[in-house]
Image (cartoon, rainbow, N blue to C red; front, top):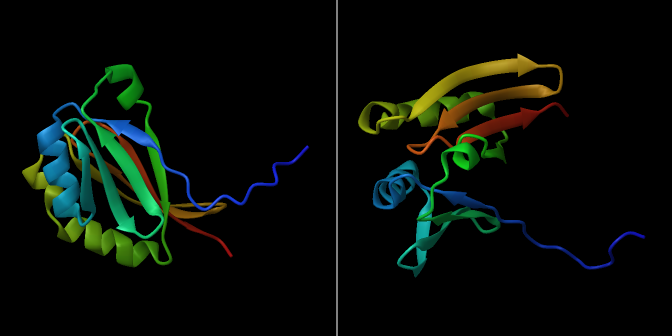
Length: 124
């Protein structure tokens, strides 16, 4: 039986190896922060695109955490990501160039803790 509720948003929790450093990283990357408590913040890139960052770290969990952020233009996104230079400023941050797959194109970013971001442009 399908659910009848109208859903408006989905949010994930990710952890941080170094909470203050990772907060600084996401602010520099362009997210806005709403502090919830001393060990939890909400990071928002636009109205319904956000995630919770918590001061909590389990290596196996973080190394298997992935977030997909759909973009309209992966080329433009890649230029903006690499222009930040954050991969040179923050240890562990790395960018992986655009790959073309049968479903679309994507590029990648690892945050300072190891969370893997997929920036995807799906075929229409």
